[in-house]
Image (cartoon, rainbow, N blue to C red; front, side, top):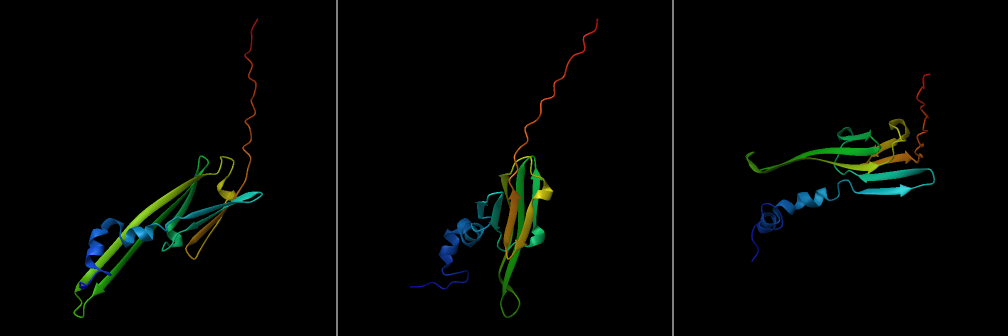
Length: 141
């Protein structure tokens, strides 16, 4: 015997899968990343489905490139009289970091966000060895 469902395929499926239900399945696709190495650069392709361009921030600090994404969504279902049958809201944020080296600057990185995919090109730069300066102590006399 099938039970009537107001939430999905089956009321008990929604109840027993509760925190790992549809929200977890949607969030598993967030920030999936492909890193490709070219001769002179690296390409990062990151999936950010449902995230708007203005909600994505990239920061370079101490050789680490960190990408932050925020997401908000809501859905409502009402009956004929305008009463709520179901209301759901979701808000979340996530971030990923990659070490790109301290020689890379913000101006070197090219980024483009299109159709829920962030593409970044980071040039390969060799870390310049610090030149040791000899310091002598003045000897009087």
